[in-house]
Image (tube, rainbow, N blue to C red; front, side):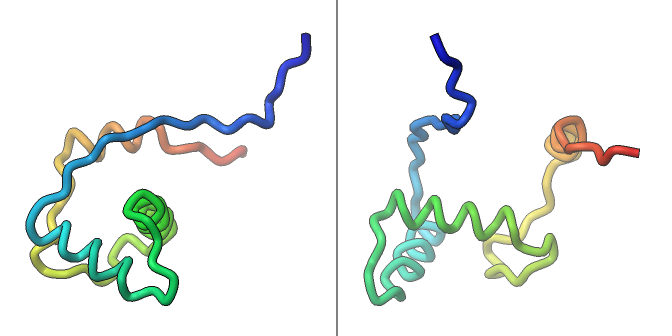
Length: 83
């Protein structure tokens, strides 16, 4: 039996978008020549968000500060650099 370490982890995620955030996602995906599915649009937006600068421009209605608990959780899983 052979271990396949090349398989990437994945999960199905159910997400409800309402109001302004739904409209922003719809506008974003419809702005493309080839309109991605909602699932693909959300994957692309998550990738963009995770690679963006922390202080990137965001619509004012979506700006908020993370709670101190969520910041602490992120700090616990942040990779460390070898010394």
